[in-house]
Image 1 (cartoon, protein in one colour):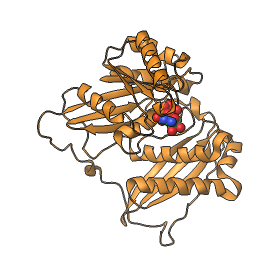
Image 2: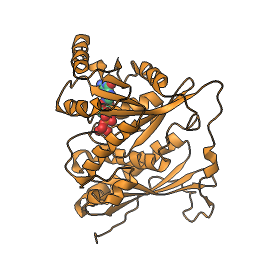
Image 3: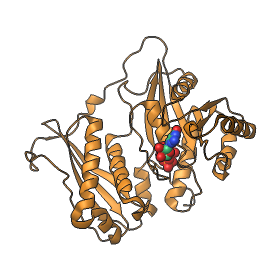
Image 4: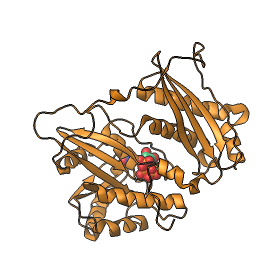
Length: 338
Ligand SMILES: Nc1nc2c(ncn2[C@@H]2O[C@H](COP(=O)(O)OP(=O)(O)OP(=O)(O)O)[C@@H](O)[C@H]2O)c(=O)[nH]1
């Protein structure tokens, strides 16, 4: 049994918040509602966004949806869970499957991520390959082109980060990639500035099949808020700890309670693999975790537009990355021969 510690960081709560509050109400599931009926034919479908780590998938997903649904970081491989955003364009609802970065897998978790990414791609109605135009063609892109050939779906090539490179270099790269694998459309965008993003959204909207909408109009993401909140805390942790902490740590939202006064009480556990890492996360006199907690709390509160009370616990769980239960929880497939 791995040793387990718990530490609590309360952020900066209001003095009037009573921990023993008896007015705890679970969120009302009926509040999800049903899609609003639209006049005329509607479209709805899935778009798989594929790309090498750091190509900008999360940034593009956010730009397409217009709300922060997927976590962006300067680190590679931050997208562990399958976070989907829902973009609306006229009568079309476009569900974006933000696949984890495809790279050469070593650990079981990484293999699960790759299997999962391709399964999502094959199930989608449209495939979009996102390429960091600044980086250009490399082995990772090569590795993606092969399997893509066999998936017979409308496919787009999206060259991203055009704010960083010259137009002639861009056109040469587009021609090079199109020669390797013909694409139905080629887009040149900057997910960061939003340049060209509307054209991509419009094309996705035209490509998805005629279908009733699957989600209520105001639901920008079907990733449960719990998962989003966990991703936010995880992002704050990485931003603060830089290279001190390996990628092998995870955050889970253990409880989410809507209080009657309109605020939300959230409890999350940060899992690390070793006691030394737990100490790093806590920081001197709990200072690091307090900062992480207070930054995460502010961001979650901003997104859900409710007051948030966030409690963070740090626990040591050895080799969580090899535990199939963990990645099943994250919506990932169990790799064959794992
Ligand atoms: N200059 C510039 N930077 C961008 C653009 N799009 C994304 N970035 C940056 O590239 C980095 C990676 O972006 P992400 O959206 O996290 O990439 P990702 O493909 O989701 O990465 P993984 O989750 O690791 O697979 C971040 O620092 C972004 O700010 C762009 O159009 N221009």
